[in-house]
Length: 143
Image (cartoon, rainbow, N blue to C red; front, side, top):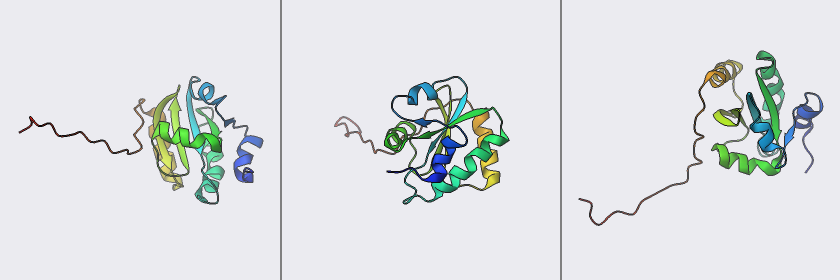
């Protein structure tokens, strides 16, 4: 599958690496803050093209504050499972490999600014689960 030109531009013009199995962990666990762009299929999720245009502008607001990378399509399911988001496209924010939070879909500019500022100053946290139901069998000794 050929990469859409707006997503390819992130690497070609802005130098964002595309993360695959061989370079994903090294990028994520490097010191400092980072954002992972999980685009999804542009045909199925056309919003990803809007986010591809907005992402470099967001990095300009905080110059040098965080690094960006594009998740290769074959890695997106693993990233989704690891960080517990359920909507495409999603920006996942990390600090030294630890989870800070995520923003899904296209947002108003003011929302991006406020939420990213919160994430960049937030303590690390545990990623949410992807919503797999867990149930326990009732104990015969209860009640």
